Amino acid sequence: MKIDTKTTHSAEEITREACKKLLANPVMEDFAFSVEKV
Image 1 (tube, rainbow, N blue to C red):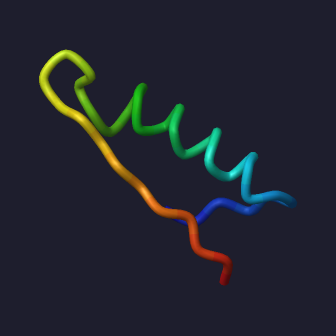
Image 2: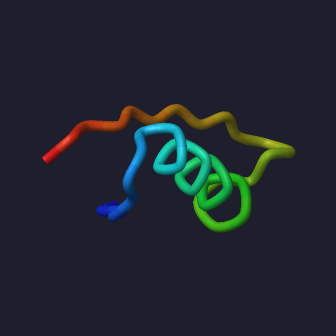
């Protein structure tokens, strides 16, 4: 996923929310992600 933000912190927050709401079922699954500057 590519996210355009000014800070790493805001990219982490957006990614965390996307994982919770769209990508993972929090009842049955865990998730992990990493943020890289490109």
